[in-house]
Amino acid sequence: MENYILETKDMGISFGGLKAAQNVNLRIKKNQIYGLIGPNGAGKTTVFNLLTGVYKPTAGTFYLDGEELKGLSQEKINQKGIARTFQNIRLFNNMTVVRNVMVGLHNNPQFKCSLWESLFRLPRHFRCEKEMRAKAKELLCIFDLEDERNNLACNLPYGKQRKLEIARALATDPKLLLLDEPAAGMNPHETEDLVRTIKLIRDRFDMTILLIEHDMKFVSGLCDEITVLNFGTVLTEGKTKEALSNPEVVRAYIGG
Amino acid sequence: MNIKKIKWNHYINYIVIGIFTVVLTVMSLNGPLNSSLLFLLEKVAISIILAVSLSLVVGFLGELSLGHAGFMCVGAYLGGKVSALLVPSLGNGIAAFLISLAVGAGVAALCGVIIGIPALRLRGDYLAIVTLAFGEIVKSVFQNTSKETFGGAIGLNTPRYDKKYLFIIAFTLVLVTLAIIQNFIRSKHGRAVTAIRDNEIAARATGINVTKYKLITFTLSATFAGIAGVLYSYSNYTVQSAKFGYNYSIEILVMVVLGGMGKINGSIIAATLITYLNTKLATVLTGDLAVLQNLFYALILIVIVIYNNAPALKQFRNRYDVSAILKKIFKHRSDPSHVKDDAQKWDVVPTKIEMNEVLSVDMVPPEMKDYNKGNGGKK
Image (cartoon, rainbow over all chains, first blue to last red; front, side, top):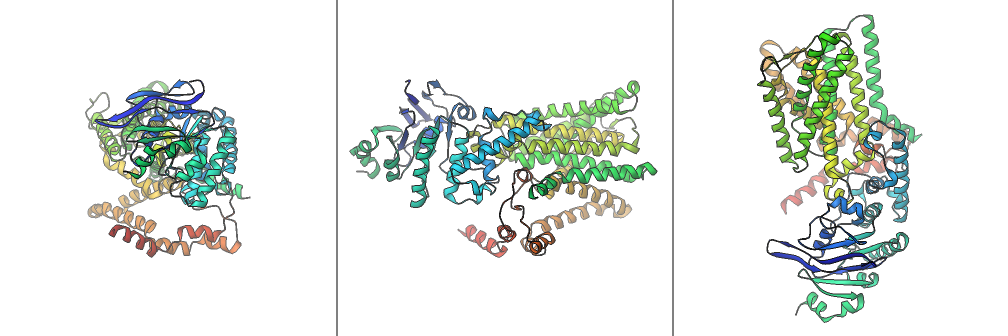
């Protein structure tokens, strides 16, 4: 267990009689890019929702860096170190790009400033705001978004919105980053750019990444290991190439 | 230079209200102001505090509250009662006023917490109905008190305060309200609140404690409504619960909506105009014409809303916008006017967008917009 940043143990959830996910056992090592794939409705996003506290597992449990996180609220889990992006982008649309990232920095202990300090504009408020803005700009630079920082998030092109969502998730200083279909709806050029960005995140932030994706080229180019889900259960797992050539996986995708 | 300009923008409401107050104070030194003007000034100050505090919940948290008058009612009764109890021993001075202010605001804040707790579970229409019910409950509770406690249906009489200078206190309180609410919005905490408004799910996933911030916003908003209530009790000599019904809550909401969601300065202007309009209509249309008051009030509201939102008029205003024309002539680098609410202006650092680019954001021809909409509807 000591080697794994994320470990789930027979995790599952059922809604009434429907078992949306069961006996999911993921073991992700530090600094890995791990893929979670499967046909539509296989329960991939459900697993993400379990890991981020949107749903509470009805069976099994999961550990982040050896600490059990089962049953915590979404914001608590985020503070413990799991950050995510969404399948359909969820940005703070009416806020500027830089503010989006600054919301991500909200809980960072570096930028502590109580409500009273803000209400009465004590020196710490100004220092905190200034440092937050600088830190946010730094993050935006990495994602090549710094020229857009004063635009509204909703006015960004699609690819940049995806990047901004990742930047915001990274701002919360996570140990594990969950990306839900990061390449969905992107053109080949943007996808290529995204592969580079994700690799950069891993190297630069020493990050562990778990991602859901349908684009097999993207997955095989990026992931070290994958888990294939089908009908809420694990079909197979292992090294990307081997798992993808497993006949059962092919059958699950193509049918027959 | 640009940064300086934005700071001006930020402080302009303090400056305008400050100068306004100082001028009136100087005027009143020469001789007391007309008593109806004094009363109007107090009313305007109360409306501004109410509108700005409600805009915190409606414009920045994005929840609809229909019970703002209820919080004000709590503040008015509690503040009035405390001052009535204190005046015999403390005298009718600033000390009694401050204590009743603290009590009124404190109890209103407590009610804010109480109403905030269901607010954490409910959203949108459901919350609106809960707040509406709260307002009506408060109203009828005070209506049914005994004569000795809160005066019941007749109302509570409050001590007569020296009216000559009450407006100065009232506008000082407006400035305090503005300072605290704007400071809140333009901080990391206010940013968290606007994040909740924009996307609650994402805010949770980003580690924002949604529960905590909803509660803080409701409480802050209720506190200032309570302060407005205490002012009201000092301004009117008598507090009657019938005044704080549903209609009054709606009137405050109208101020916020007319001023523009998430725009503090807009709320201030709308509050001033509507209060003035109401008072003027009441003095102009008397006798048989009194029935027309509400009609004219409603007509004027409709005209203002149409003027603000009709696409043709919007385009017309954009074309003949004096400040835009001036900026074009002098080729100023603009401040991004596409930034939507006040909280953001604070963040805006000068950008390199030229004026015509900025205009283009809002200059999609209205017929195009309608065309797109129509198509979507048909499908």
